Each structure stands twice: as structure tokens, then as C-alpha cells.
Length: 284
Image 1 (cartoon, helix red, strand yellow):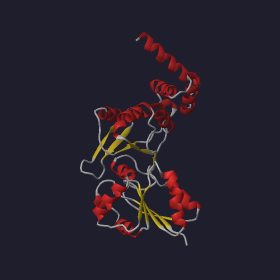
Image 2 (image 1 turned 30 degrees about the vertical axis):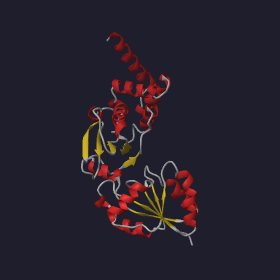
Image 3 (image 1 turned 180 degrees about the vertical axis):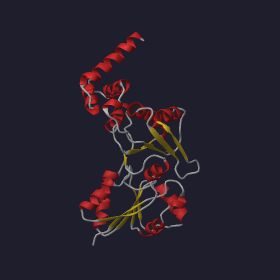
Image 4 (image 1 turned 90 degrees about the horizontal axis):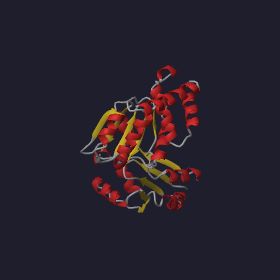
């Protein structure tokens, strides 16, 4: 008889948000795989639980190596509980590899639903929530980050990102450049914690605000791209889109062709806008 893999959501801030089933699962699990065993101890103490199962660390650095061991425990009949530092395992946290291994072996996977920074930020952002997509953490390197953002520049759904506080200003500046400075967004900081803050504004405004330094756990929510037709794109916008592509590594000819295709315009019209902007810079 095979075991069960339980993915348990943990509080993203306020310990009172812990799912009612979490304490029972922590007490009953034969193996607890924790992203940080010290945080796990603090969690169990706060919930008044004394785990009886074996506790092992399961984090980004050992996830690949430890997954087979945990999969074997599941195959042997163990009830394995997976918890990460905050939120739901496998959502930008360790867990995907173990879930995939369990599914491949035909082992049952279930979850203890809990708090989610993604859904919490989306709900309080004030932006459309009927359709959205989660993009995780943007790449750390500037060029890769810009390229990734460019892939979703025309995405109509609301976008949700995680970001480290020390990279927030660079990421918001890149978003303002790629998506446009007037795109609405919200930066959600320290959700459900004592110093919770939701800063709303345009990407340009938020980039200026973040340049002064921001602390805490960060979730960014960005409004989806508006509907646009060829007649709605000013020459300045065409030039901006070409420059974004060039800075991401595309040759100018390729960038002009891509922007023309996106806008439904002749390549000549985009080319003329780029040339006119270049001439204006020279004379200015």
C-alpha cells in the first residue's frame, strides 16, 4: 500500500491564518519535509503541536537529491507532509519535483489549502481579477528580465509577480520601460503582517517610489495590456517598442519587423518613425 503526499499551505504572515487541518497533519505525518526546519519548529510551537514524525530539510539546494528518498518513503506507505516557509508548496517554492515523482509512481497527492500571496495580492490590488497569470520571480539579470517582460508585454490578463525587495526598483523600472509608464500596478508588501502596505499607481510612479528603497516580502500586480489597434499607437510608442527589442538583443531590422507585425502596420511606417526619432535627437 502506497503512502500519501500532503502539500500544506502555511501562513504568509499572521499565524492565525493557519488552516485548521495544518496542526493535525503536522502531528500525524510520518515524515515532514520542510524548506526551513527552524521555521517549522517556530510554526509547530505557535500551533501547540509536537510532531512525532521524522523531520528532513527540503529546499532549493537539496531538492533534486532528496526527492528520490522522499518518493521511496511514499512508495513504502509513509504519509509525507511538505511545508515551505510561507504559502503553498511548489508555487515558486520547493515541491514540484516531489509532486511529479509521486504522480509518476501513482502515489496520491493531496493538499491542505492555505494562504496564498498570489491570490491575496490580486484580491487587494484593485486591478481586474477575472483573468490573471502568475509569472513567479523575474530573472535577476537585466537583459534576461527585459526579454521575459517583453514576452508578456501584450498579455491582456492581469500579471502577478514575486520579487526580492533589493531588486524591486530595477524590476519596476524595467516594467515601466517595457509595458509603458502609464500601466497601472500595485506593489503589495508584507501581506497580513504588522506593516502590511499596498502601494497603487502607475508603473512610472511606483518605480520612482521604489527607488528610495523598500523592505519586506513583495508581490507585484500589473494591469494587463489594453486593447490597441494600429491607429492607437503613436510614433513615440512604436519607437519605444523597437528600442526595447534592440536593448534585448534584436537587430534593428528584426525589431522593426516584429513591432510592425504586432501593431498591424507596414514595416515602412515603423521604420520612418524610428528614423524621425533619430533625426530629432540629432537636431535636439
